[in-house]
Length: 549
Image (cartoon, rainbow, N blue to C red; front, side, top):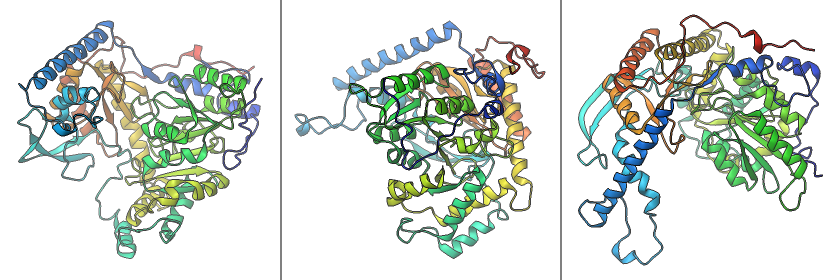
C-alpha cells in the first residue's frame, strides 16, 4: 500500500505539526476521529449559515427549454448565413485559405455569435467616472444587434454601483486620503520599468511586504503586480509532475490555469464537500500515482476564502483537519475574503479563529478590499525565499507601480489602525452591517440567494436566459449598475446577478436598490424562493450543538 510523500518538501520544506486536542477544540471540533465533522462545533454553525436553495422544478424546465429554443434559432440563423441571406459579422478565413486548417472553429463560436452577441450590451459598459458607490455610464446603442456600438453623447449620471469589488470603499478620490499616494508619484514616478531582481526593488516594496506579513500574522510575504498571475504563475513553481492537486469544483480560473500549467495531476472535489475531499485524499494516500502506485511527491489542496460566484465561505477548520490528517498542503486564495471578513479584516483565518501557520500558502489580491492592483503570497520565510528565485512572476514581471504600492500601504495601515484612526475598523463593521441587512431583505422579498451570511458577494438566482437580459437592462433603466453572469461562467441552469456590497454604500442607497429589486422581481417573476423568512433574527437550533465528550 502506497503512502503519500507529502511529508517530503513543498519546495521548500513546510513544517507539518500534529493536531493537538486543544487545537481541535479551538477550531470547533470535539472528536479527533470525525471525518468531516458534520453538524458539530463552530465550523458547522458557520456552514449552516450558508444558503443554497434549489429552484422549483418548473424553473429548471423552463430554463432548459429557453436554451433549447435559442439554440434552434441559432442553427436556423447559421443556415441563413450559409446561403447568404444573412450577413455573418464574425471573423472568417479568406476564400483562398479554405483548404488550410481553420483558424476559427465554426462550432466553437456558435454560442458567441448566436447567444452572447444578442445580449452583449449588458457587459463591457463604458464607465466615465470614479467607480465608487456611484458612477457615470456612457450611453451607447447598436444598429446591428450588438455587433457594433455607437455612443449617443449622453451620460447616465449617479448610477448606483452594485458590481465592483470595492468592499471597503478604498476606490476613492478624496484628496486628503490620497495625499501620500500623490507624494510617491512625485518621488518615484508612476512606473519602475524593471523587475524586482534587477533594479526595480524599491524601499516601499519591501515596506509593503513586511506590512503584509505583519497583517496576516506570518513570517514573510512577497507581492506581485497582477492578482491573476499571482495564482497562475506561482502554482507551477510549487508543484509539478508527480504531484497531486485537489481543487474545489468552483475554484477561480486563475487557480485552474495555474494547476494546468504545473503539469501535476488534478482531481476535483465537490464544492465545500468534506466527504468528497476526504475520499480523494484517502484514495491518493492508499493508491498513490496511477499505474506505478508510487507515492505522490506532494498533495496540494486548493481552495478560496470566498467563492466569487457562489458567495460561500470555505470550510477552513475542517479542511485544515483533513490536510493534517493526510499530510497534505493547503493553498488558500483570499482574493475576496482578505479585508472583507473577520472582526479586523484579516480574512477567513480570523473569522474561523484558525492559526495562519496552519495554512501553508496564503494568497490574496490588492484589487478588491484595498482599491489597488496586484497580489501576494505569504507563509513561511523558506517558502517566500524559494518563490523569489523560482516564480515566473517574481523573475520576469515588472515591479508594482509606486503609487499603487503606496495605495496598498495606505489602505492596510488604515485597516490596522496604524494611521492613528479607527476609520478602517469602521469600514469593516459597516461592510458587515450592509451585508447582513441586504441579504436579510432579499430573503424576505422571496429571492433565491446563494452564499454565507457574512459574504459581501450576494448572487441572486435568475435562471432563465431571457430574464437575465431583461433584469440587467431594467436595472440600468432605474440607474442601478449590476453584473449578470451566465453560462459558461456558471452552470447552464444557474444564471444569476451578482451583487457586491461595499462599506461606501449608504443605507439610503441600499434601500433604493432593494425597492427597485422588489419591483423588478415582481415584474419579471424572479421571486422563486419557497421558504418563509421572518424579519426577526433566527433562533439557534439546539440540535446543532454537541457537548465535548
